[in-house]
Amino acid sequence: MKTIESSRRQFASDNNSGICPEAWEALRESNQGHARGYGDDQWTEKAADLIRDLFETDCEVFFVFNGTAANSLSLASLCQSYHSILCHEIAHVETDECGAPEFFSNGTKVLLLSGANGKIDPASVEQMVNRRTDIHYPKPRVLSLTQASEVGTVYSPEEVRTLGQTARTLGLRMHMDGARFANAVASLGVSPGEITWKAGVDVLCFGGTKNGTHVGDAVVFFNRDLAHEFDYRCKQSGQLASKMRFLAAPWIGMLQEGAWLRHANHANHAAELLAKGMQAIPGVKLLFPRQANSVFAELPETVRAGMRERGWFFYTFIGRGGCRMMCSWDTTEEDVRAFLSDLAELSAGSPKHGSDTGSR
Image 1: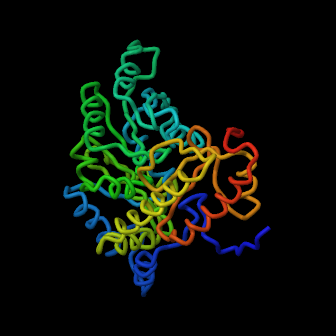
Image 2: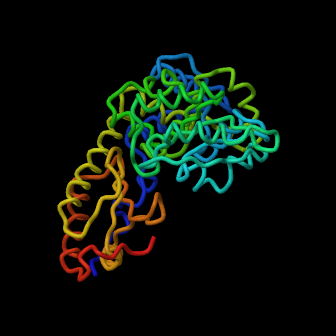
Image 3: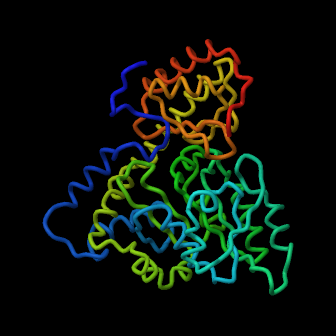
């Protein structure tokens, strides 16, 4: 077994990476003297203005500690307790939020939609809304998209616009879970506005943590009316930071000179190299198109075990089985080559040569 240093970069999650230099420097700069608390400071104001500039619209911006809070509180602001939220059957708000959307909305029901490659089929939206219209059924109110999806695929501008039009026709609001929104923008090569408010998105949960900040996501209301008293929701749920500048300042470092997009492009490129390398290894099967910063693959169980013995970490419960390899803002080509080298060596020695799908 190889000796593995604890600081080794991994492919389990982009949450495992550290703070990027631009966010770290902005955080350091904000840690000078005193500043007013609870968001009444120059750092929070500037970060919010930079987000407005980025999207080229006058949106309402709030900073919360994490993505669960961002998704759950924003969804709650779009619903009443007797409403329902429509999302893909493997969306994060369904599979990985521990019931937080239902909890913070006082019981709003989550209804599940189908669609290939982790993306919602517009026809399934209409079918779900029209399935029942009686008073005994939770009334559909919100359509939630995950961009990039839980299996690393990306909605094109046309796909978002189609879903936005479908939502409007059916009387739904549209929410976007953008934990990896930066990676989607980098993949598509479009302006952020093209796949959000211009396509019908009412509120975006803009992820910063996976892109290189230390903590904190932004909730961006393009429909400002829907942000009414959202600050009270944040306070009541423990998401109003007393020293808010330390959530907001890293966004200045990320946005003011484009670091957010550079880091997303870098992570996507690393995933592209990883996917190409894995495709060339016998016994390895890619499960979904590589469009953002993740690669999903089926590996023989013996190879999975061997990779873990050599100190490589990855998840096997996300999406629809297989192994997820996630690249980060600091993933290097050397990291990719080292992973591929071990994978190729173990795959060559695997007696099942990829026929064993392993446990899901």
